[in-house]
Amino acid sequence: VRYYLSNIQTKAHLNAFVEVYGPSALARAAWVDEKLASGKAGKLAGMVIGIKDVLCYAGHESNASSKILQGYEAQFTTTAIQRLIDEDAIIIGRLNCDEFGMGSSNENSAHGKVLNALDESRVPGGSSGGSAVAVQANLCTVALGTDTGGSVRQPAAFTGVIGSKPTYSRVSRWGLIAYASSFDTIGVFSRTIRDNALVMEIMAGHDEFDSTSSRKPVLPYSQLLHFEKRAKVAYLKESIESPILQPEIKANTLSVLDKLKEEGHIVEEVEFPLLEYILPTYYILTTAEASSNLSRFDGVKYGYRSPNAHNLESMYKKTRSEGFGDEVKRRIMLGTFVLSASYYDAYFTKAQKVRRLIKDFTENLLNDFDYIIMPTTPSTAFKFGEHSEDPVAMYLEDLFTVQASVSGVPAISIPNGQDKEGMPIGLQVMANSFKEAELYAFSNYLV
Ligand code: GLN
Image 1: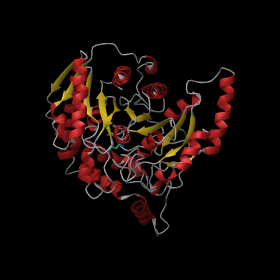
Image 2: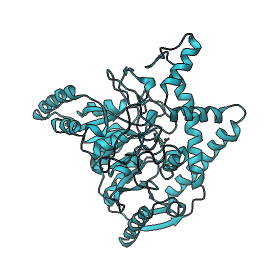
Image 3: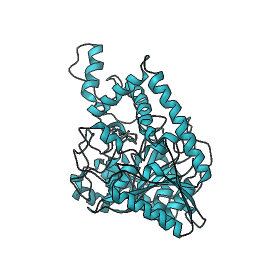
Image 4: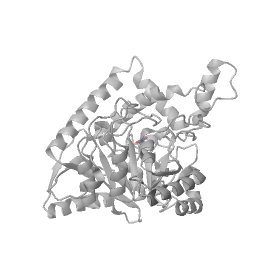
């Protein structure tokens, strides 16, 4: 803990942590030490973990990196965090992110931007940018993020660490401040597959506080990392031929596929004509869900209340106008529009139907093949400001991560070399729902 606290101090300018629980982490470390000495320590004894600022932790502030939640103190602890604490993990602090998880560069945060530790003129990715940089810069062992459309995998790729997203419903969402409830998952950043698998297996499993959480038994992923079978791998023609894919990322992805072939695995190219519809489907459905989820922030119950209001109506309006950032407002407006009576069928209902097609295609493909391999991102970490004036260019950064989110299947990003400027490249692997054990074992083989 002392080691990490000193790193956090020297790397404070990266702006990854928005709050450090220094004294309580040190006290807990001493207590875990005693448990270790008596041989009664939990599976995560001494693991130092940072948490994204959208996960509630009782008695601590949680802002979702938004001004509207300034001063909001959580009344209860996220189930996933509680399970880590119960295994003697040490929670070291709260990590910066894009406001309510909306963004791909961590530039939309009320706490300010997070810098990529490899090149401080570049973004760390988003929305879990603080979590990615915390692991990248050695500020904690493992960090929790949330992945609604790529927010763990994309920043993991941009910072050169491992980032996973479980099957939707595998990890309870209780305590996670909702962005898009039918997509939200809690994921893990780590330096090793084993740490990632271990933390995931402890967080996973049914929770009476989240009725959507799965009752399927959880396997001990971290003990099943040995991979010796012949894998059947698909890659999507449209992803590898995408005109926005950076050439070095294409080359590195193809070289992994070639190597797998040489090693005797089956690798096949598959056509996926729906690829271009995934991003619009994702942004219609997530903005719709967000506009509904975020209606609870009205100045009455949580955090910020405008001091400039003179009656109830203006209190709602001013609180929301002053409390939400531009990107969040854009999404609330988009979501309200696609849900409006005259456009509901044209946008929302249609997007739901397309979601079903994408999910069916993906699951069927993953019945025929064990894994889908894809680049995690079309480009490596870009410079600050490069996409901030153009929301569509920013949304395109999620092109390859949203398929797993729309389909609900688990996915992971692992480091796969670097581009000519030395920025890390991520390789994404997807498996069918609830195949986390297989996903981790194969990733362990690939790294
Ligand atoms: N960049 C995507 C978005 O802004 C993903 C966000 C996420 O996974 N939380 O919606």
